[in-house]
Length: 327
Image 1 (cartoon, one colour):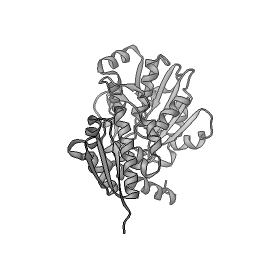
Image 2: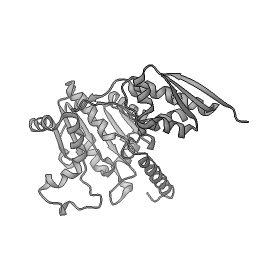
Image 3: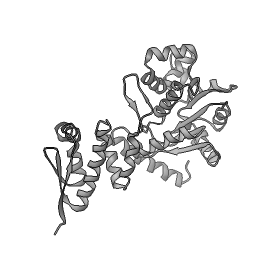
Image 4: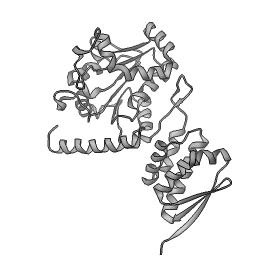
């Protein structure tokens, strides 16, 4: 005989109930399917029925989601599934960290904040260290959040300049076959950085700051021979640097500056993946004070659920190859 039970949750307002249930009950349907429970609404009260363990987990998830709604979060499949993962891991109490304030506001008025605990750890690491390496799969917000932190520092006048750079390494294409001069050729590699800045500043302000020299977006080779003072410097796609390049970049650090280095070590486009500067830097610098290293997982992916599944499969394949000493 199954141990069935029911539990009731009071929702503070009709608006809260509407946000919880979602369009055509889409949010509640996700919860019902995840925990094999039945959920009904009675005015501003929610009834959850099913086996006790399932009801307890569903109620925990609903409690977290209602707290997110209360703090202005819009529920969607991505953040609901992330709450499921927190509940299943017993970390639902940590969810409140995700709605505590924000980093900055975009030109459209959107508040940029951590969406996962991994992202919150990353933001805290950037706040508390001079150099941070953010390592993980695509879609975890490594670049976007780093740019947001740079914009926050710039707006508060903590730094005078934002410098964004990437190595111009081809992922199957050849620079020589691309049209235009050198800047035109490398612009496609810098596009994700442009997009993040446009989002934060707007195209007009971005152009003005670029012309004034307050923002610089350039290939990594342009960093050689410089000392970067009073700057927030972001090196993106660092898995495609050589050991010499990343050492050159790190030694550009000047006074009152921060550096954030991002990359995905499962997407190395170098001819010899074992010589990735990012992989080497993590090993060499892991115990150096004031350098933070944050590793993201597929749980930190804030894109379609299928992206998480794809990343998980590729990470397994990467680990299998590494265990066979093929990389």
